[in-house]
Length: 379
Image 1: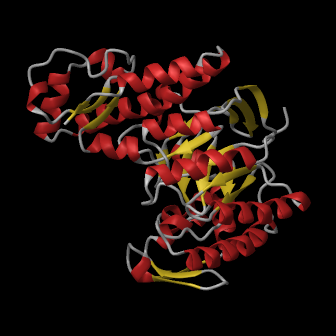
Image 2: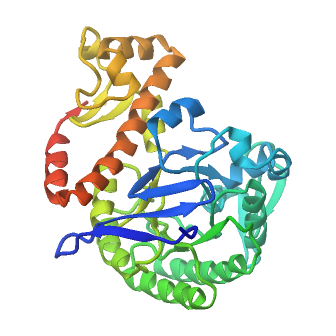
């Protein structure tokens, strides 16, 4: 199977659903979709070892261009055999462009058409990220999927600012497309435009014009879940996804809440990523099939029950809620690891279960039952 050639295995299209199941191959393995990508910002998925991550069985994980270029440095990682070898992960890796991190450094950066000048958050040194530099870093990291550099505006940005941002992102995309990547690497384009569907459509037209001459290997939707009301995000997503090419993977960036993943799958999204599962785990907030659980709550102190009765991860099949409560209260690092194993297992498992339901032609029943179970929240 040709790498990055997307093959749709089954789809559902009606008034409210346009979900699909698919697969594509990379040089480091096949990705079965829909898939959730755990975030390995600095060359590790926080709280778990590669062996523990392997047991969770994510299809693909994500690395961060900005952080890895600053520390330990992309040249060093290249000299040590690339990011796969450096972090001892044999499966597919997607690297983001660094744009989101740079643009979040508002007081410390300046944007021009050439790129972004910014100060390192580590030592304050002056740095510059251009489309070409982002591509160079990702080429050195030797990831499988490379993300084009985009300007990621703040949530609820004014339309005029979004129009300028979209125009600049298009020009940067042309420069990214012209940069020679590794033979095994595929480039994904990113659509921007905030909550303005007409801007998103205009930007998609610009992207597809470039794609017609030099095809991209996938398409991403960026700039959602950044502060806008969820109804606006869902309205944009439900319309935009159906207009993306059907023969390439579709990636919704930075979205990881279970309800948002399920909605995205129903709209035809193939790939998701977010730090939410690992971040929530470190704060004792756990995602389960029966709702969100706060393991810090005193009610769990004497509970012999597993965290999630419907989960077979190492945490749930081995330990009680009482033990997880104790570890968190005692500040034991093991507690953070066990919480992370579960949250990642649940989130990755949600996409895996949705895939099975799609293949079984039972997604509507699965989605309804899953949402019903989420009605409770352990505050």
